Amino acid sequence: MKTKYLKINPDDNVAVAISDLKAGEEITVANQTIRLAEDVPAGHKVALKDFAEGENVIKYGYPIGHTRKALGKGCWINEKNIQTNLAGLLEYTYNPVNVSLDIPKKDLTFKGYRRKNGDVGIRNEIWIVPTVGCVNGIANQLAEKLREETGGKGVDAIVPFPHNYGCSQLGDDHENTKKILRDMVLHPNAGAVLVVGLGCENNQPDVFKEFLGDYDHDRIAFMVTQKVHDEIEEGMKLLRGLYEKASQDTRTDIPLSELRVGLKCGGSDGFSGITANPLLGMFSDFLIAQGGTSVLTEVPEMFGAETILMNRCRTKELFEETVKLINDFKEYFLSHGEPVGENPSPGNKAGGISTLEDKALGCTQKCGKSYVEGVMPYGERLKVKGLNLLSAPGNDLVASTALASCGCHMVLFTTGRGTPFGTYVPTMKISTNSKLAENKPTWIDFNAGVIVEDEPMQKTLERFIDYVVRVASGELVNNEKKGYREIAIFKNGVTL
Image: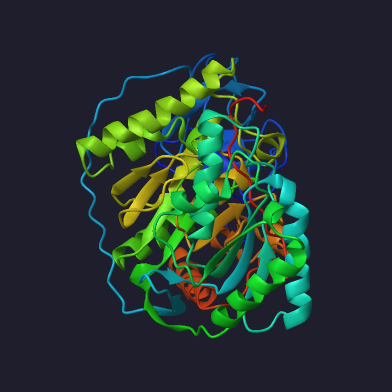
């Protein structure tokens, strides 16, 4: 390892420990030598100056909070001695910045599936989607029987997606369920879909069918279980027909410009904003330079860094949509009597993230430096290429489901603590540190921890681009290998 500590931005008044630092140890930063007053764990911050009570702590070149009390040079700075500067709603001013990225265009392709409507998928799977949670067991049994019957051959996977909703919901909750299920049924990673309904639910199958709009009747079938004698027998008849069609699909060369990726982080630590998130930012800029699309979500984890995104909006209208995106989520917090700044989890804090601003400034690095070209409400589908912002909470499975539902082919998920889950598209885990990659090889797909060890960022990026192309072309990530695939739908209101 080249260094044991890092000052990220010249304006910072803290450094980050790359490995554990011991009390009494001396570090030299910007020509000053500092003796550590106490042990500082890896990923955590050390004071580079004497702080007065209430003074701003600067990291990534921005304030991440203020001190709760006076702190001396060489102290360990953590959530116990600093606190957030965030409060309620804010008024914002559009101060657009000029974005100029010198990234060459390469004629890269991946092996994908061209659908009848011209859309592209990176998987060719058969999905069984319940309209309501009452038929989850039926969906699970149908998927199991089709896998047994086909030996799992001919398509990439056969997967049911049970969920708890589709009935006893009102207003926005009911609309959210309809939108997410619609987005799944129309997703190009599915070669065929069987929609399984009950018949008496709020999410009526016939109404839901109309809600889909124009769809491929050869690849999407419906079964209302209250209207058939034997739902397993009838479901298998429909699935056999869908399987016969989907199993004939083949991969073909697709320009990288048609790839859409979601950007997500979870179980973040003090290395997230130094290794994996900047790597995703560079990849996002690269993909956009090729004509592709990336989507950033987790709106509450933009708080404290939102002006960076607002000023990169291509137009004043997009700026205003981003302001609404931020303030709507703040109002959501406040309407439930919750403060807007109480976000870092116990795992985040243990990993070195002390405030929401600390987390946000690392989180937003995932989207690089490109212009914001689109802003989407929850459950809506992509309409423009380039960098898009999507309304969704920070919860890992809810946000990842939302990214898949807007049309992303895969989710690129950075983590410093590790997590095994996956949503209904490939959910690639990128570790922020090498220790995690070593300890959890069946969770982690790509290790960005080498960036603070001995590998230049550009070389890591080149390896990452190659890996993403391979995954888009069919190479499985760990959540697919393990069968960890779930969905979660955002809920806000009452349950009847």
